[in-house]
Length: 183
Length: 430
Image (cartoon, one colour):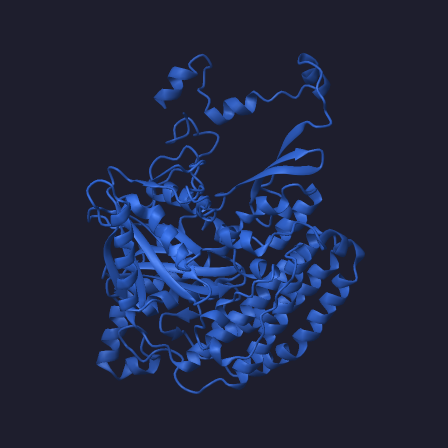
């Protein structure tokens, strides 16, 4: 893990890089740095996710372990997407996190190849899972469909305000009356 | 529903979209269907074939949409979710220690690993120290579980490739392991043995002797598997050189575990980033060279020997001491204290009714499961229930590599590759 100082240095570099790129009003790429229980987390602006991940890849964090969603309900912005990055040479991990409001939960997909010709192929299924469970739309994902829930399912079940239980079981005899059975 | 009444109002009982599609399938002979169109070149025709979900070779309920050109696989789309049981959602409604049994049921062949990843994540969040004896006991059970998982993989994979008898041998040895699990925890599967802060009980008398017997017998049995399979011409023909994938592609797809090691990349979290005292043990990481199906098989078979080595060292070096943390705010007090200590009774009551609280924060903690990096993400909001539990299951991520492996190879190799991929659908769908 980068230590607390190392995390600040990474954040400083990312901010500087984003400021150099920005043509209009300079927006801050890194919103917050969290160093908790020996683990480093960068909270970034969702618009910069692809550039942040690309520059972290240049630093050696070339393995994307996991993309997963989290819901901070009732806080706003409530939806979060975490990208767990790993540097295999130094065995170093860093978490990149972005926060999205529930009304406009959209972020660029990191799966397809970008301008540098490199994407993160591992994000394919994982982004689909986040979309399925949290309703975060990944812009530019070529195949953004539900992955674990049925295609005709309504709602995003891992959101914190999604109720537990009470799912009717669809049999042949009640398929016309149960929710989501007819399109 | 009203929407269907509008669209399909002609038929008396409204049909769902699925039923309409189902009824549109005609069973007329293929010649007649072809005759309707112009002449078609059947040689290069693409055929889309549904494979699974209920097929023994899919190792569960994996469904694959395979596009074939003759016998050559041109494209493949995995369709998953058939055993999605919403465990991550269920976990959010249970107190921390009650999550363990549901989380064990994700990857149902590696239940100790699920519990380990989750418990270690909660321990890191709550800053709980795990006593050395508990760490060693965990290692013993993890490695036993790794062998058991590999045995099921080996037996079922060989079954897919037509070798029937080895399945029986593998289950015979797995039985020894399950007996050991039964001794230590009372259950053969989904044992709920790991607790936050340690393990639920110390190993009973007689466990050590039985484990020594197992350590004695297992390498010889693994030799036998090798003797059966390594000189089997059919197995070799179907595994050697089929569906290789290089390490760089595997890394970009996020593949870890034996699949990555088979391609020559010696990445193992037990070595790279040791947890639970793995740094105390001397073992090797088996790696392959070309990353074909044979290497995937050979790496897993070699891992069985290494796990036995770890077992022996862990048993020899098993430290004395408590088997679970002494922190009464986390772990239940010993049974005998309840009769004499009011404080113990209060702790017991609070732990059983409400559970312990964990300081707010979030953590991602990876361990090395039999299939690769098993990461557990836990977010705490300060209450006694986790606000989010996510398992980065290696089967789920590794499955993405399947289409890269099998494109351009024969459908028979697809069966072998699915077997060597070792997907566990309980872990994929969670």
